[in-house]
Every structure is written in C-alpha cells, then in structure tokens.
Image (cartoon, rainbow, N blue to C red; front, side, top):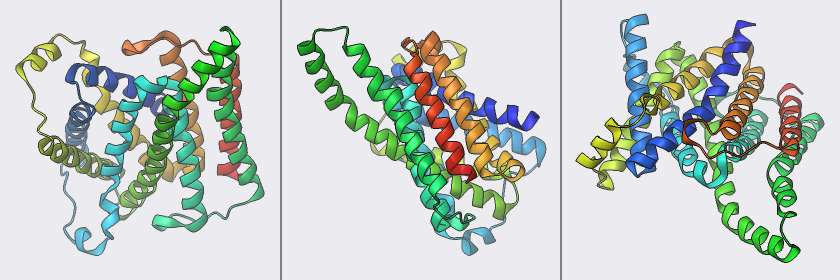
Length: 318
C-alpha cells in the first residue's frame, strides 16, 4: 500500500510542477529560462540526495564506451517534455496539458512494448490493448472536444459555430504538440529505466537525466542569448517561495518512477501515476492553485477521465 500511495503522490505532483513552472515563466519571460531554473534546482537536489545516500554521484567511465548513445538522451527528452508543458499550460489549461501528453504516452508505450525497443520487455499488441486505446481516445473526446461543444450551446448557433471553428483552429496545433511531447516522455521513461538497470542505481539514473537536461537547456539559453536582467532578479525576489520547487517536484517524479518500476512493474506504475496526474490536474484547474486560471471541472470531463483510466488499464494489463 505505501508504494501505491507513493505512485499517486508523484503523479499528483506533475501538474503542480507544470503550474509552478508556468508561474516562473511569467516572471522570467521565457519557457527555456524557467525550464533551466527548474532543471538546475532539480539537479542540485538530486546531487545533494546522492551525496547523502551514496557519498558519490559519479559512475564508472566504462559505461560511456560500452552502452549505446541513446541511453544518455533521456534528460534531453525531459527538457522537451517539461518546456512543452510550460508552453502548453496557458494555451490548453491544466487538464488538457495532462490529457494530450497522456495520449502520446499511451501510443508510444504501446509501440515500445510491442517491438521491445530500448531493451524493454516485449508485449505483443492484443485485442484488449486495442480496445484500451479506443477507450483512451473516447476519454480524450469526452474531456476535451465534447466539453467545449456543450459550453458553446450557451451562445447563439452562429456565434457558437464561429467560436468553435476559431477555437479548434487555435487549439489543434497545441494539442498536437502535447501529443508529441507525450510520445517523447514515454521514450524518456524507457531510456531512463534501462539506464537505472545498467548502472544499478535509480537515484544516479535520475541525476544523470536531470544533469543532461540542465546542460542541454544551458546550451540553448546561451545560444539564444537569454540573459538574466537585474529587473528579473528583483521580480524573482518578490515571488512566493513555491516558485522554486518545480525542479524538486520533477526530480522526485523521475526518481519515484525509476524506484517503483522494479517493485510494482511498469504497467501498474503507469496506471497509478496516471491516476495521480489526473487528480492533480483536476485540483489545479478547479481551485486555480499556483496562479493557474480557474476552470471548473464538468461531469463530462470526469466521465472522459474515467474512460481514459479504463483504457490505460486494458492497455497495460492485457
């Protein structure tokens, strides 16, 4: 039971991290800068924990020559996922920012399982998994599209049609971006899982992932000439304390996943974390936590999320 609770907690923290980092972005004026701060804080946190628990954050140099190149890019994929969430949050809201990447995660995880990519255990595509995918798609429709259509009924038919077309036109690229970032997140999970296995340390695997992500963001920031100005420093000093904890939440999320998978199995961990993510996004949207815009959750969205959870269970357990 404690492991189940841990899975729910780390899943619950992900949408909170997105909301916190979105607030940080509003201060820094750049998704890359806010991601850099988040990864920097997370990296320092993991270094401290590693030093306390293992007394050495290093790994054997032989791993660099014996392991495939892709084993080190999990952190870079995490950069894309985190930065994508920061960009998507003000465009789609907390629930959709979770839902669209989840759809991408499901599709990519099915491909990884079916073909055994990245040394993952192979699980052939079955009828149950196909039904699960359809349930996930139905859940996305109920939670996203149908909810918007119902709300438009409050307007006149002509106005509703016009706004609906405009909304679909504006939101579709952002929803697709969310889908792609979700696919990359599933790749990161598989890669980090293998990394933790070969170095025999979930903590060091999480640290390597965050360190690679931090270096990647630092290079991007330097190339694009983003500078921290005195005005931004003054603004940051006036912000609430929680604006800095996004990186720690992200570090705990990665570490928790790497720790739980050997104990509970990938399928069960994905389901538990997913439930936590959904619950967290609902709370963030419902109450407008951490500066997020309030978006009351409807019964249709709850039904859609229920469909998605059912679909994920079929995909992961059959």
